[in-house]
Image (cartoon, rainbow, N blue to C red):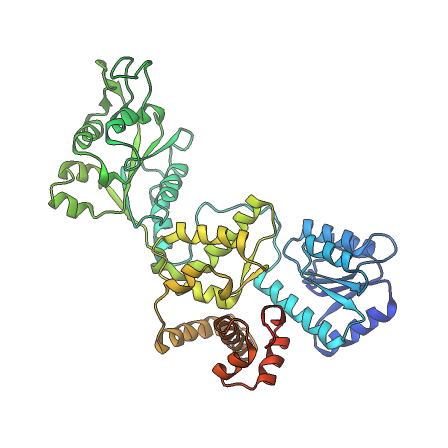
Length: 468
């Protein structure tokens, strides 16, 4: 069983001794190595939580060690030690994905505090996992999503027509694909069409195909989506916007199982499972005469309601981490991480664009956020300003929930961590409000200037806080 310790890698025995005594005093387990080669050999049998390594050592360098640790265990923070004169190596370290660099000679307390930050980062990442773990097709721990998963399981051997309802961006096509993938038709095509995105005069041909010469420009016969999906599943998104004449043709296919191409004279047999989706209230559209009642009943054999993201706010951290990792893989960069305060802030937002909006936000953060750990101040302005002004009751309710979750996890030192997050958030917001002017920020916060300066230094906020 791996020890999950802090690894110290340095050929200087005195440095190793200093770290060993300092970390023992703080109750932090450590393991000492004389060379990068020795540490890399040990990676086959043990997994560190944090690595602290000198750059220049006999054999492989600290940069070599950094590269190999990041390749094999990308979520393990690596702190690189370097001499003041070795700034080029420090740049190389950051480009290679180092968590931080520690200039020599260093203050022992500063080094221990840096290691604590790295351990906290490692804790946020969770237990180190293999980099190539399979990506789940859908994510969700909220009860409403678990009910959707159960419904997909119950329908796994069914050919029944399904109607998926839910707001735009809530993931209706993902549910349709999952229904197909877990059905007896999984070996056949899955064809999706957004009926609202295709011009009315082209939609009939898109669905049913056309014969040569059926209309101007039809120079060759063409299969429609029903023929392309033969034996499989046809997903009709935004079915509520389908024109009345096409509703009649779709009803005929669902009723007797055959259709005609545009301009065609021969009936074509159809063996297709139809899954429809809409963000609209079809019951209301039926009452208004905008949607055929008989077609509605044909489509509404099994109805699945997909919850809006605001109804499953507890899934936002899970989804955000997944989307950040996905964007990082696409862009071939290290994945950004959301701080606990940023995650709590996002979890309180309404997200009118639902999961799609969260996914787009995570892609924006991957490209635009300045650091590896994303704070509230790093979020785009429209997200920060979109939330209504919270009342005391709103944030206290969130604090209650967070405290309950931490206690259930058996977490220790809750007051210290929450107080640190609370102060950090207030200081960052005040500095942002004053444009980095510390005296003004201190007055607004009710702190002395020296007290604010000390807190800024303790929290590592010096880069973002201007001196007055």
